[in-house]
Length: 147
Length: 475
Image (cartoon, rainbow over all chains, first blue to last red; front, side, top):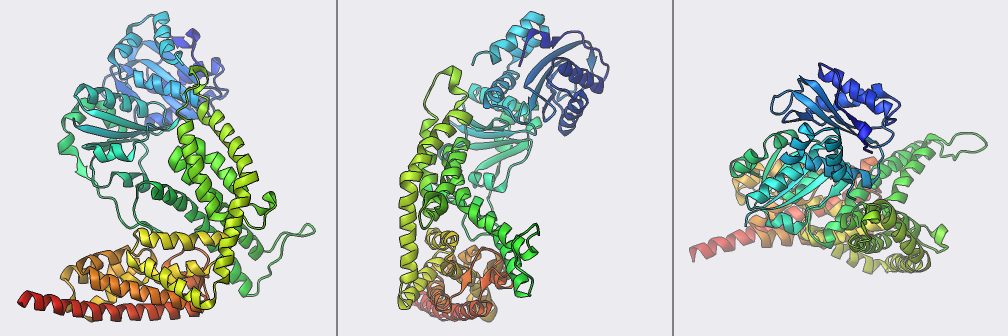
């Protein structure tokens, strides 16, 4: 579900669309999907319903989709700030993305719920935004690895 | 200490549901509230609010991203409710908690529920039974209408032929058989949703399968299936079994497999065997005996039974007494006993229609408000529910309830004498036209006499009551 190789600190992209496309391709590289284009569309659809940029420069693009093969968490950071229609109106440069297959086990869903719950804790979000690759890894792994 | 309960959900059920739940819990507890948050996410409903938690809560927060059904909403009747989009909640939970009292509005659940003559949410066992009934209703309504169309087609001379030698079945045959499926599955669905209401999702599958088994004489080798008794017994037993099963702690490694693997497997194993060897045959025997008794009641006794059922149905207009008689009639449908449900079809439409007609005949016996609501009461009464009669009864309980009950009893007895049969719930007085009630002529005779009597009784009893009131006022 999550490994250090799921963290990308150098993603390119000037716009929301470019970032989502990149995330979908990275998910495909990791074997989480065979249909990155579909996943990209699923991301977009979710963003259209309401923004996943919950403020503080971080967004949580996510999708529950038939095109997803296994539950996957991706973390991405970019050099430049990207406009995301975020709740606080500020641009975003950190993304924590959750992909879930249409049918998934309670175990994974519970872990992902736990991860989401942590995103409203300021220390956790600050750690994600400022941490190094291995710090981010440990921070997320600490939440979802406890079970 | 002030208390808050909240429900969160969102489109995908992955992120916002849980973020907002956590934020409300965190911020609320910091401010000294007692907080309970139900999450309706991809993982199913978790931390489901109990009736006690809701009753004790000062405020209800509904942070919704995918809406909430009226059925689900019923439980917040008369509470102070703040409803807002989940993304708005996420934006600023502190602000939300700052202005709880200004933003809260008292929520009133609608008392009239579509398509059934049942009352709003009750608590305890009855609420679980009604959860089963409301899940089963669409099966008999949909299936019943298809059966009705099928039988109308046959009456107009269309062939009723099963598929044979590579030929398709005739249209009427197909409609009848698809419709019949609704009746076959209404019982397991009822059992499944009774169990689901008590023990949540893990209870659903075992209860569905075992109730189906208990209701399948061909699998059990018995004469009759367990019918609604089996559904009630298995639904409740499995529901509570699972409810307590869930509390067992089997260690972190396996705990997460409880809901979708261990509980359904163990429960199905235990109750599958129990049903096959014990519950099924026993419930089948009870049901068979019950039907035998009902069918062998001499006609004179049946008339008394019909009178009692009619009185009960009219007495509290959708309350527990009405419900008991209604449930009895409805549940016998799956055993192909239709006359008791026929009484429901005749009696439940009468009280509101009679009250409305009485206001038209003698306007001065009623208040302005009663007169103005007469047309809606008449329309809703003739199609959907008995509840519109309640306001009229509350205004003058003794004469109105006496009139309704007496007329209801007579109509019930008449319905039994005339052998009125109702095969599924539909739209009240129009059911005979849909083929859901037959014979149509007998229905309208029983209904018409009941209605006229009810109106006469109202005018008579209420007139006497008013006279007495006036005398008392002068004296």
